[in-house]
Amino acid sequence: LFQLSCSSTQLNELLLFAVGFIMAGTPVVLTISSYIHVAAAVLRICSAEGRKKAFSTCSSHLTVVCLFYGTGIFSCMRLGSEETSDKDKGVGIFNTVINPKLNPLIYGLGNLMFRVL
Image 1 (cartoon, rainbow, N blue to C red):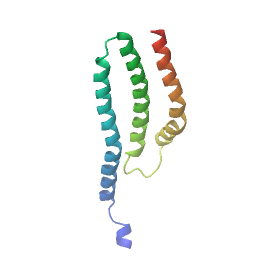
Image 2: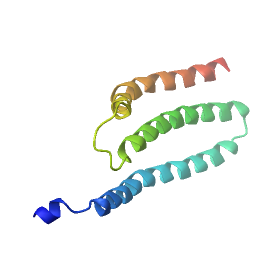
Image 3: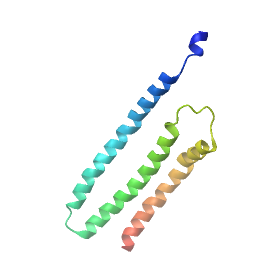
Image 4: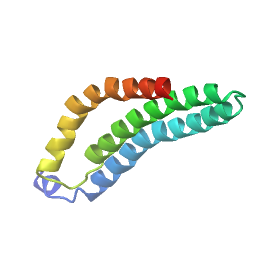
């Protein structure tokens, strides 16, 4: 039991990284591929007003997705860190408090910008 507790954890960390990459990478790839299809469909719209409205909605959603994935990947993909730093605490607060409060603001500004233009 003592040998197991003192053994290297490098293989465990590598496996954790691989599983985390698959768990985070799959939704990112699916999101990117769906946005490629959405962009292709939006570019087929004949009216400029319709394209503006569609891209406005997509840009708001993409901003929220990037904020969510960016902070999530930063906080989940840190290997080998024994203690929590101030950055980790800041990212945790951003994910749990600031990011949900930004969603209505981002979507509201997206709709407001569309109405102004």
